[in-house]
Amino acid sequence: MAPVVSPRRRRTLPLALALLALGGSLASCSRQRGDQLRLGAGIALTGNAGLLGQDARTGLDLARQQFAKQAPGLELQLEDTGSDEAGATVAFRRLINAKPVAILGPSLSQQGFAVMPMADRAGIPVIGVSTTAEGIPQIGPFVARVASPVTVVAPRSLAKAVQLNPGIRRVAVFFAQDDVFCTSETRIFQRAIRSKGLELVAVQRTSVHDTDFQIPITNVLRSRPQLVVISALVSDGGNLVRQLRELGYTGPIVAGNGLNTPNIYPVCQRHCDGLMITQAYNPSLANASNRNLLALFRRGRAADAVPPQVTAQAYSAYQVVHEALANLKGSLPKGTTLSSLPLQELRQRLLKTLLAGTYQTPLGELRFSPEGEVLQRDFSVARVSMAADGRSGRFVLLP
Ligand code: 1QQ
Image (cartoon, rainbow, N blue to C red; front, side, top):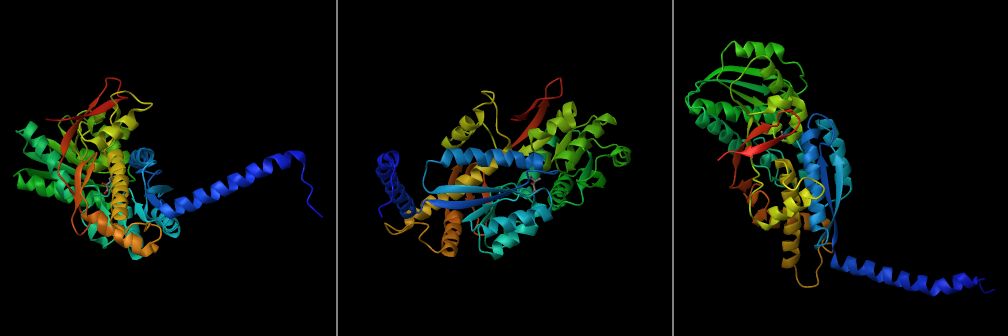
């Protein structure tokens, strides 16, 4: 018996069939173009480093908007790593199982040494967005980063502080001993202090979990430092800065990359004023990529709002992967799609193409060493300038 078709269904059936056919041909068309690839990202959205990871999330989101209409299409899978190794391990396991073409992240070097080897062993290119400790690219052949290392970054803020305060002789250092980025950064700071002939009058260990610094600060202030240099993360570092000022320290403070976010404002408030921090991002850079980032960032914000460094780094990481995939696609024989390559081969060729490329990003021109270390040219040093109410501030780039 013929199926009973209601008059309404009879009218809509041909249309439905036509749409189905069109959908099918569109699907096979997009498969043919090979344009839908998965990009993983493991970022600290919660915990102590969440305040830095939020900046990265903004950058990834803006890059996704910017490149949404350009081939190849990337589907971004973002996982929260939390701020420790255990959270990062869960997030990276999930990402690896999702079979991405590459993974961006994690936020902290401390997490990177735990999870980058996982991606490396799986043969997945993993691009550090904000991991600046020494040794990250050396983790394995599939590991690279867009964040310039402490060896390049840290000495600049110290040199600027000394240039602006030529009378300085006595320097005290604080560092969080339970974070590998902090121990790496303080090593570079301390080397730079000694090489300038300055006296290291105190080296004080703290923890990223500390909130009360009264005792270590009291000990350090006894050594009468004329400059304080801090390697810590956002919450502990911000509290340390605030308590240093509350306990009477009035000299200059150099802070490391762990405090490099406007999200420190609610933590150290008016006491953030004057902090000196090296910047791998200059918002006034006049290239097309930075103009795009600024325009996207300013939508729904003040017309002169500027993205934090980590936002620009995350945006750049996404851009580099996107452009490397586009370059790779261009090198394939006509008619060959990226997704027609076996996934492992695609990842290997992506890595090779990525490391060989030159990219005009919001961080300026980026290239990579064969080992995956980023080669960046442009840096500056910012001085944090807080409004009188202690709520808002700016990172003012020093000449
Ligand atoms: C690192 C860092 C972080 C503090 C930046 C988010 O530089 O862990 O290497």
